[in-house]
Image (tube, helix red, strand yellow):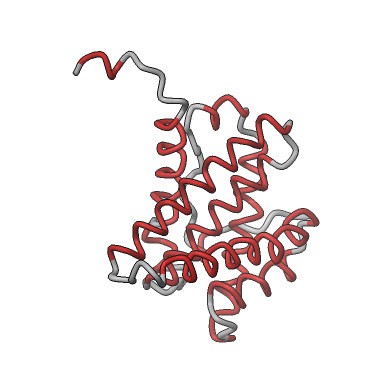
Amino acid sequence: MILRFFRRNGGDETIQRLYGAIVAHSRQPVFYTDYGVPDTIAGRFEMILVHAFLLFHRLKHESEARRALGQRVFDAFCTDMDANLREMGVGDLTVPKKMKKVAEAFYGRVGAYEAPLEAGDLDALGEAVLRNVYGSNEAHGLQARALADYMIGAAAALRAIPFAALAVGDFPLAPPAAPGTMETQPS
């Protein structure tokens, strides 16, 4: 029994720690209260996608070997989504179809968020967030823009984090500020 503590786990604990940090960060109440993200399965899923995207965005300029960390986190995400679907009672024959939709959703969000985030285009990112997180409900326009602003700030914060921190499973983002407390920086 004690020998299991001395075996190498291939980094599985690190990946689970990093993915767990992404999930924990995405569940912060401020997203569901002040940012108005729907506190539903779909809303929570969207917030996990936002934070997973932020990690992958951070890793995209790393070497191929370092970007493999992102693939392992994506694999953990898929394993978690599969398990959640099964816990919700989705049948074995339906799970692969649902997982295909999960993967399509993830890659769709990456495609929608990447260019505006890279360009720092708050308007375009806000539109993508409004469409994906808020279902194009215009009543959430200001909240979508605030969430897009949060994403731009989080991406900048993650760029300052050394890869070594991520490689040990840290996802050191500060808690998000409530949208009304964010200060706009002069250009």
